[in-house]
Image (cartoon, rainbow, N blue to C red):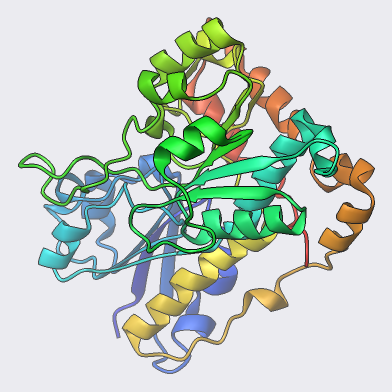
Amino acid sequence: MRPLTIVADSNIASLDEFFNASTLGQETMRTVNIITVAGRAINARLLAECQPDVLLIRSVTRVGEPLLADNKSVKFIGSATIGTDHVDQDYLAARNITFANATGCSKHSVAQYVLTAILTLCPQHWQPSIAPVTLGIIGLGNIGSTLAQYAYDLGWQVLGYDPLLPASNINNASFEQVLSQSNVISLHVPLTDKRDDTHPSGSDYPTRYLIDKNALDAMPSETLLINSARGPVINAAELEADIKCTGRQVVLDVFEHEPEISEQLLSKLAIATPHIAGYTVEGKLRGTQIIYDALCEKLAVSPVQSMHTLLPLNMFLWSELKTHPERLIKFYDIMQDDASLRSKLADGQVKGIDFDQLRRDYHLRREWQS
């Protein structure tokens, strides 16, 4: 029987533990050949040479006709990420290529990143009775709704906005209300373009440049803005102008022109990190687990690997942090990630190769256990 050939982004966690002959071929005695490369090195030429059956990616690999037009072997593509804006799903469907992404894999990781950013810059928010907090959340999918639950647990008020979901106790405000009435605004939306002839699979609620000059002007200058979703959700040039004018505190984990970041923008940010908000041991393993399970379903084999057998002991408890907020830096030192990114500045920018290296070599955090 022909070996199962997999091309995979080397930045996917525990590839060897999940994708091997004993975890995928145990019922068919099929051998597995896995080829790992950097995500940005996955191109049409590589796929033509390797002729893989399976392609496993993260967000840096763009998948569509330019990548796959000359390839007839790929039957399954798994993205170990929540977002899907890097994948042309209509094209894959037309080619009868199965696609799976890791929905919800890092919802706690990203929510905890946002909380850390807020409480590092505004430690008074640990005590909402003294410093009332209204957290505005734009986008109430897996991450946004998880963040809302943490906020409620801290006694904060939440203003949530998501036009794709019905009104609820969380989805309780208009876009304008979130902008004008929040102390902190956190973005948790996919990157979408306006539905038109150019983007037939676009959205009636496009998010590209959702935060532009008009949106920024609607925010009080003291409102903290956090983006851990997708870079182009914010217009970078208009954000720079706003910070220069208002002195607003802004936290970015994602950037419009990623992986390059200009010094001009970086110097204006309160916290900047290299797209690692979801980079926890649990979040990464969960992402791999989800696409492994989906591939097992595609191959009609029973999944035998579980992330729980790979997890080391975790002593980071949410209940302890709430009781001892002074220990936040021990749970997650976000300013160390900020310093690591800024240390890569050279000749007026952070270069893409350095940005990618920070992500590749990142020492994974642990999620705080409830």
